[in-house]
Amino acid sequence: MKATKEIGGMIHQIQQDTQGAVSAMGNGTEKVESGVQLVDKTGTALAGIADAVMQTADMIRQIAVATEEQSTATQQIAGDLESIARTSKETATGVNESAKASHDLSLLAAELQGLVSSFRVSPGGLRTPVTT
Image 1 (cartoon, helix red, strand yellow):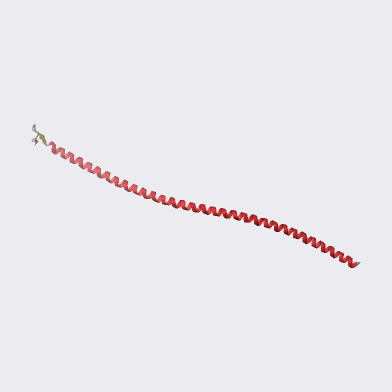
Image 2 (cartoon, one colour):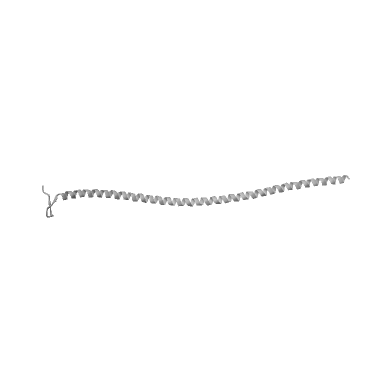
């Protein structure tokens, strides 16, 4: 009977150990399932981050293109302003030359008036120098 009792105790111990192993396996399975869910969430989050990075890269490319276009437009405006400044300078030079020509013409007109005033128109339409 003692051997039967010992065998019964061993069986009982094996059953307890088996239940402990089953319980531990159940806990391990739950942890694995929880880990799988975390990995899925992480994958989803990483996919979202990758999409955001791609969108940001696209925006950066668009900003770079717009900046290049603005730079080109700014260079063109600068060239146009230089052309306007050059034209303004040429116009100012032309105005100064016109003013000098007008002054010279005024002097010539005064001189001509002086010369013409030395002549007198006679009744027959002939001009004769004025004698003093």
